[in-house]
Structure formats: C-alpha cells, structure tokens
Length: 263
Image 1 (cartoon, rainbow, N blue to C red):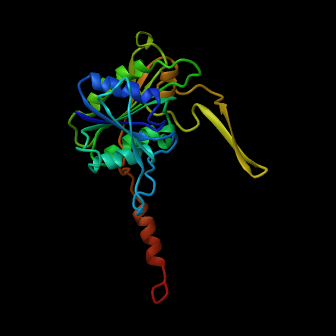
Image 2 (spheres, one colour):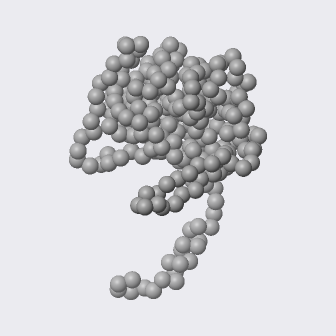
Image 3 (cartoon, one colour):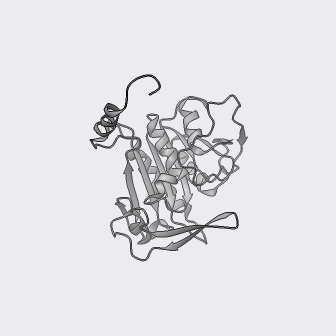
C-alpha cells in the first residue's frame, strides 16, 4: 500500500521514524508528512486552510531511511492528512498511520489527541487509518514494540469494509517479548485515570493533574495498557449517533416562533 505516516510530536520524533521504518520494511510505499514542531493535543485541527496564504513545507532527510520522502509541514497532522488525500504530495494514500506517540491515547484522550485526530481525519476522507501510541515513560522507550505491532494493525484497518476503519492501538512501554498479548478494549470514561482542577492566579490559568482515586475498569484501554497488554479499539470516526428526538424539540420551538417582518 501507499501509506502516509504522520504524527503530532514533530517530524524529528523517534517514534515516527520507528513507525515509518517498520512499515517500509513490511513492503509498503511510505511517505512522511508531519508537523515541523511539536503540536501535541491538536486533535483534528486543520488550521486556516481556506485562506489565501500558502502553507510552509520543507524537505527533511533521515540518514537511517534515505529512501523515504520526508516533509515538515507548518500545520497540525490532520492538515497533512487532508492535503495528502487531495493529492498534494503525489498519489492519494491507501492508508494513514499516525504515531508513535510517547504517551498512551486511551479513554477521552482520543478526542484531544493529534495522533488520533489525524487518523479520524483520514477516515472522514475515505481512507483507513491507524493511530499508534505508547505508554508514557521518563526513561527509555521501546519504540520497536509499538512499531512491530503497528504493521498487522494497519493491515486490519485497511481490510475492505463498508466504511473506512480506524484502529486505535495503545502499547505498554515494554520489550515485545514482555507484552502480555493484545486485547480489544473499550475507551475508559472521562476522568477514569486522572482528575484535574483549574484556577486563575494573577492572570494565569493553572491546571493541576492528580491521579484518580479509584482503579479504572479492568476491561478499559487505560487499565489493560497499565497491566501490560497492548490494546486495539476500533473507532467509528464521524458517524451520526442513532438517537432521536432532537429535530422534534427544535421544530417545536420553530412552530412557536412569531412570524412576520423582523422575526
């Protein structure tokens, strides 16, 4: 497949290089377009695409992967996906792989993650995608563990389906042989694995994060990764919820509105 590799930590992150190398070694045609700097937490933001100014982009070179085209974009990762799917960098990709993010994107973090946001953007444009993240560490990262698991995860995401698949893969920071296995997991609820508070002090808003006062649900992605499992969570992307009643409530207000000039 022709695979676009991107991330939200910047084009020089070791995680994206490990991911690109693994997919290249698996026989895919890999090209990299990623932010020029760290844009973590960008979600699916694309920036001012519909303005008149051009988007700066620069060629980069990775000594370890001289055969892979690498571009640094002055925009979030979802922009890289958007432009690639429009054909800005050659042929439209068959799949998108986003990561490897240093820090798990479990639970509600998928809403804010630039790593996952890029994958969801791809699905919205009709392209299957994979988001890959690894448990946060203050020491060495075992990038190869996540990179090796990303290859079959992307293959699953790219299988023919009624709509483009998105696979959210989270991996413990362990050597591959020490990972307990792979489990399908549900997203941990908001606040399941940390608690935050915010207040204004002398013109600044300050946020304090604390550990949750209870253990997350044992079948949630947050708990399983903490316990040494790699988790996969299929995401639907942009899909309307099967809920009813909103139209009737709004239309009822419309019917009660006064009619005539100036209304």
